[in-house]
View 1 (cartoon, one colour):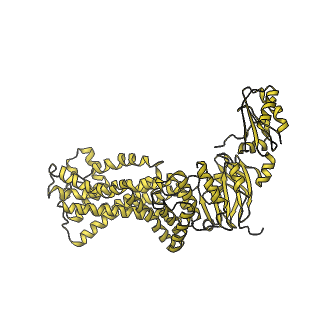
View 2 (spheres, chains in turn red, blue):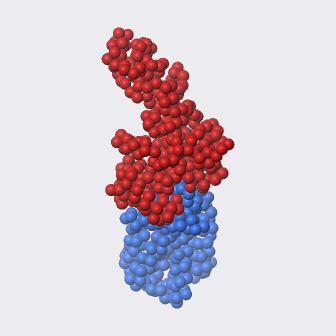
View 3 (spheres, one colour):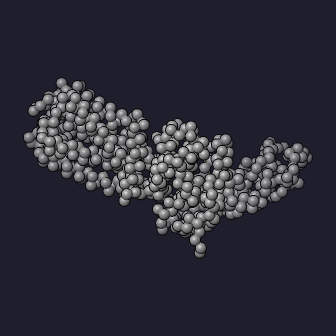
Length: 321
Length: 263
């Protein structure tokens, strides 16, 4: 096989006692592209990132980063990667600037370059004002940005960002999206995990959906969206018996099969472009459905799973610890 | 090899910055040792009588060793905190030397213990304590103190890699170290203790360390004539105790550190 400068996993698995956190995962991230690793809590996203970043060794299979096998030569892998963790792993008792300078020194960059990169990144991530304050006084969003800056100090060719926007407010999230959307720097390979379909759609070239440690689906955002449809209409009813009737009533507006969630008493269906809510209300009324709530929204990760799994079994979302 | 040294220094500087920036940590190595010297000198100084010299002359050796032993709380807290906060994951994903984190920690904590020692010795001199031996003995005394400091830095690091959370550190230190320093000759001669306690105190490594330091400084030791072997050879026995403790603490710490920080 030709040397692969991006990220490759083959039959990757990680077992904790009798639980497989990750099982038979195959994926490939071409150099210079962005992979969105999409899944709920416990789907195995963080486990996969920890294996790629040499923090965990796999139970089965193999993984390579920038052409280097992660178990054969972990220290060579560490020269090539930048990592921003789920819990911003920066030092609260140092200033933002001191954090970045320390990381730069530990990448063995020359002192002058460390200083230059630190100033640049503080500026780019909008932290210049707070640069000399202790990080424990930072807001959650600022910590995340600093964590991201830390992963960029040495301009590593491969970046791993584990749920970079989880816990951020909408403003912080859109700021980070904007930053990540600029591709950070030319040629960087990026693997990011997220629970938000919207985020993966916006940032990733390819998406791998993880479900309880398995790869549930792979494809470009466009391919995945083609499978689940676009905008959706969700009807919430009072009686479970009304679910079938609601599904029938909204069928004329549907662009794909409806998903029925008996527990939440909701029918969700992808809609044709141009569907007007008032028409849906009339159709529901005509069918004698007493809708408690009606809304139009973008598809979510749950919709992906509902579309990928058999509807009769309900959502396949039981979280595996 | 040079990257191991430079990485360790970068991480030692990080720890020293913590001590400098956190008032409570800074007080642990500055004001607390000063307070112990002054408190014991002035509060107990008049009440306790020691044969062969003034109480202050006797006291300083005890306070030095006791403060160094309490000093294990610092390295224990910082190590436990770093393990808990996940910053080790960041370091482990960097291309730095693998042992640099542990070495940096040890260097910084040893320097902090050294600072505490300097403050105590200086304040001891101010309240009237003196070194009565020649230069070589004084150097040996400071060498022994440094060895004792190192023992407690390692024991603290061991505690830090064992406990589940930093909150547990104070509890363990209070239950184990506090009684050990008091059931010893640090503040009172062991001769005055009831039989059971006296036996514990006589074999307590702290007692040997304190007596070793006093002997080398030429301060009164007030050792019992019928004490066990360690108290008859306090310098040798304190060095042996230190080496034995290090021989246990170092491999255990390394093993627990690996287990806690590798997945």
